[in-house]
Image: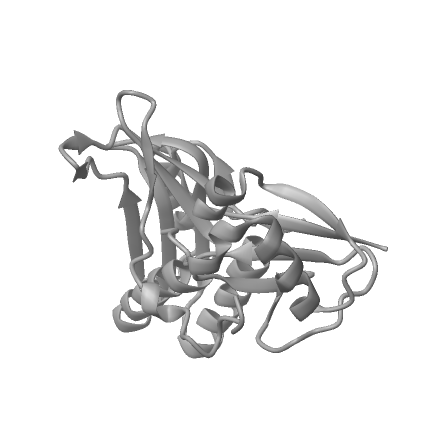
Length: 157
Length: 77
């Protein structure tokens, strides 16, 4: 049964540690590359972000996560990969993204991990509300606003 | 015939909803005309459109019960 990448709430550090220890039985692995995305307390208009509330177009997000997974295995000589992205509320200081790539040797693990993180940020329909102390919020800006090129967006509106 | 619409990110604030339906729209162009009247705030927004989970870049026919999602720039990760 395929597991979903989107997981409710913050990703606990203990889960990350367990994931690492589960791989000790896979003796052909020589390298793990792990990326953790943590919610940062950005200051926007003099107010500090307390949490991010993630939302997503779930079916399409899971579909794209699966495509990114497959592509990573095609591009890099890696042994396994685990992806977890939070949905719902994650407080500043908590982990909202966990990318874990393993391979026999270093370069494929580090390169694949980096590639996957960038692919997730540009290709998966996930959104975030940056929550402030007083019920106010702002929508998290896309890092790569320019990814939606003019010719990709439908003209006429 | 009925089409399901989904709005995400800042578009939920602009339209005031995350999901709604429209009737009698045969393709994307017709849909856009209709919703630009219904939600004029969408006019200055950037987004891509997905029909049944696939992004569309040209005018596309909309079969009955299609799901059309309006996706502003992604902000995950």
